[in-house]
Image (tube, rainbow, N blue to C red; front, side, top):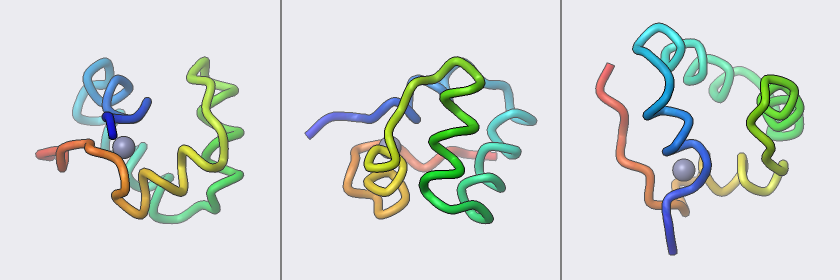
Length: 64
Ligand SMILES: [Zn+2]
């Protein structure tokens, strides 16, 4: 199992962007997050979002 696309995104984002991403993840459905992030240039599927939210991936918790 490896870190998912969210890990790479968090490395690129600054603290403010990461806070917005966390809020998006906490308030939107899987498919909505996938559409928004894909539209922002980070291609991902609904399944990637679901796995990340369930913490089935190996992303480290982000320190805000
Ligand atoms: Zn992840």
